[in-house]
Length: 559
Image (cartoon, rainbow, N blue to C red):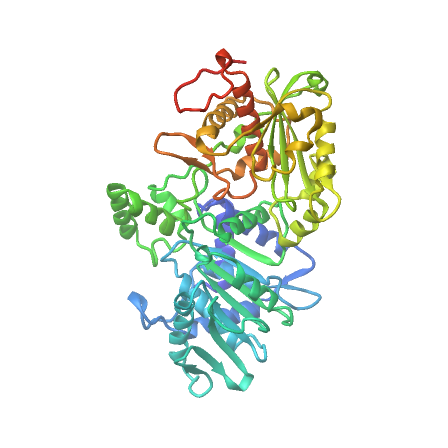
């Protein structure tokens, strides 16, 4: 006798929690959240709602591949997702807990079918009059993949003739409830004014912007229990928004950020997992051995090893959910965190100080780094305009600026933009106790400030940001942090920025910080490199004050 869906959910959760089913960190966190939700007094599990979705799924039949013609039967991990999304409800309203859901899983794990069935259920059986359902994607062709799968599934649904109409131009209509299901992309006209009950977001890793996602979010406000469901693999361009969105989702699961109405299930390798290890394949691919065969993975892995290059990148990205274009972490967070020790900052009074300044746009975070080579200490002045606090909160930034302000790590400038005179005064006040030897600055954004540094004007050094100038001090900083030879004084802002860094390396192994491809703000790290670069320039041997005029070797003083 087949095991009941509810029993399978419970067994799946128990196996993940006990370790009987090897799982990645994010899946373990999802299971922990499930147990926590089941214990909450304000929530309950609606068995009938969950079983209704499962029963509906079983009425549909696969239409291609080896399972064509067979009824859809969900795997335990899929039942677990459905139990969360459709079964967890608030006692006070009887409405579903989750408005958003993200399932991040490699290809060949039944993503399209899963999404297509959810779209059909929301259209046909969710009890919503005039339901508007959309299959959203980066372009028309991608949007139609999920939509076409739904269309094929509904064609095979018995008893639906005349009730559900599938139109060639791209819509599925239920006239009795005035409901419709359509593809949606950036090319779709009249996107404003949508009254969305369900939005299916396919392969968000390929979305260059979140424009369509924002359209969906703003379109659900009039619905009582809408659902925006995203399903995707990893991608190859870390500048696309989903790469950053995933980091936010991870922080939610780790308890750093909060978004209680968002279901999150991320299948990805943990740090240290070998990409060619079958144990990793099984952990990352929940349908391993079902729709994804071991022989297939072995063959793909072998080809990836032999060919390397794009073949290896494709295997890691699509079969293991690894952002191959996301370079490895420049410096492990553990090493950055270890760069702290008790230090009496009163010792810095009168000490030689080398300053690096990285000015952001006037509405963003600005960083100044104070490098004290005698002590191996770096202090920081991080500044944001007051409006940044509310705007960042509204966008769901992955860091808590307000907390850093309360803790004294971040200074707030009154107003919507940075007041330059106010900021200069803050900088001068911070520099007053020290013997300032050099202020190295990125010329971008400083052209109208250079003549307003007063007594510090003679210490200014324009520090260009190209690789010829940045490589040596960047490597110097890298070496110090890896050796735990620099004291960052426990500053959480600079620690966060180190985690965001992406490094560009040229064919000659020169390196520089790559702002465009970094995961988030790195201004403090850039300012630190500028400060060290100014120091190296000022203290180079034989009085040579311009040590980067060529790419030859130059010795630098030890400290």
